[in-house]
Amino acid sequence: MNTIMKHDRLAQDLMEQIEQIEAVDCHEHLMPEAERTSQDVDVFTLFSHYTQGDLRAAGMNESACASLQDTRLPLDYRWALFEPYWQHIRHTSYSRAALIALQKFYGHEDFTSENYQQISAAIQKANVPGLYRRILKETCRLKTALLQVPFAEVDRAYFIPVVHYPFCAQHDTWTSISHPEFMPDAAIRSIDDYLHAAWDCLVQAKNKGAVAVKMFVQPNAPPERSAAITIFRKLQDGELAVLPLENALTDYLFDQMIAYAGKLDLVVAVHTGYWKDFRQLSPLHMIPILQRHPQTRFDIYHLGFPWGRETLMLGKGFPNVWLNLCWTHIISQRFTQQAMSEALDLVPVNKIFAFGGDYGKPVEKVFGHLTMARENLALVMADRVKSGQISVSQAIRIAEMWLQGNPKDFYNLKFS
Image (tube, rainbow, N blue to C red):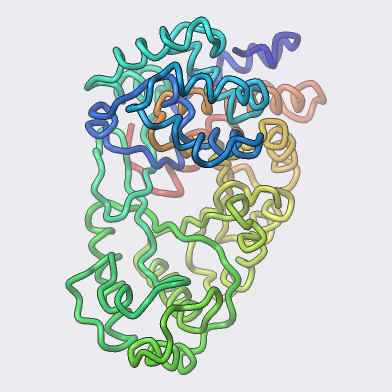
């Protein structure tokens, strides 16, 4: 599937060397292997994550999209729903990861009316214990993967935990605040009770091996404790049913827990950019937070897509910011090539993490995404070598840093 480089011999040579680098996967949502292998799978398992967004964008309605994952329905019926839309989405970067995985693991070049049943049979046959070892270790050759989970319980043979941030959010009620999901047995009667519970949660996560906490960027006002207490009491007394989108309580707790992460030397991993109403997720909302917390380290996810250049400026301007290309190669492979090239111009090379698969059920597509990330590295580095700005050995050194060395050092990961 490396046709993207078929006319560029230098890029091909670099790709062959980059493929030998054992990468750190800097962001995943993968379920436990036992959960995946216990599920019914078929050809539509490879369309169970981001490609669903492309199907909807192409016009498939919600009911039809949900039907694709309902294995109680006949496979032929679901294929008939899917096939017309496949013709519309097959050229997207999301779909390219599926095609690469299909070729690598199941021996077909495309999804067609002639082979979807054979593909389904092959996926079912492979869906047995050892799946993660075969894909993540033997094929992808990953050193480890940072896995987002609620409470730091992961299979350490494959994963390092990144836990959910324990703070209240929009639409929370008094019930969800007084019995928080992250510590439901806590007795929450005051804002300080909530903060103590959150601190204990982060300490427990750290003790269990978590290296980071994950949050979403959002518009935030400067934290004001008195205003936060007022909102807390209104919820407590029933004067306020749910927290609105923007409120002083969330602003204050959000800020306090970033400070807690800094004290515990936990990285704050931040989703920025693309998701639903992505206007709310601009990486520029991070600037006041970065200024208030210069001792806390931040891993800015997805290069803030579509605000790539603005996010690069965060990495250039703030010593406590590192930039993560998780998800970006499969959002747009071409965008990410350009962003990687600009990153070389703008940002010190120790501040970039080149890859994070960002998948849930379709573990096979981690390989597809990683292949696209390696292609992008090869193409960008080949362009720099041709221009005389770097040597081949320097190109491979940067690729090794971006794929393995930088996340290893930043997250203090332990492997040989």
